[in-house]
Amino acid sequence: MIIKPLSEEVAVGDATVLGARLVRLVNTGATEKITIGNSTPASLTLIANTSVVIEKEVGAAVAATAAVLATPVAFTN
Image (cartoon, rainbow, N blue to C red; front, top):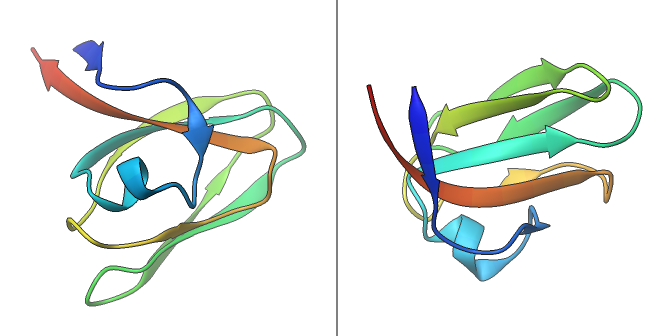
């Protein structure tokens, strides 16, 4: 997968993350649980020093500690 960053890395609570459908999350700290506030809330565990691209609903908040940074992205296969 090829991703296109659409902004600078920001805290997960930033408005650019709230308005995005696809978000790359990177965990710079210890393993932790990430919560996504979709119409049906969901969560996942993000292992220390890893990243993942998630699809969420536009307007859904992402909750995590300050160790997790986010970047809205577009992608292609």
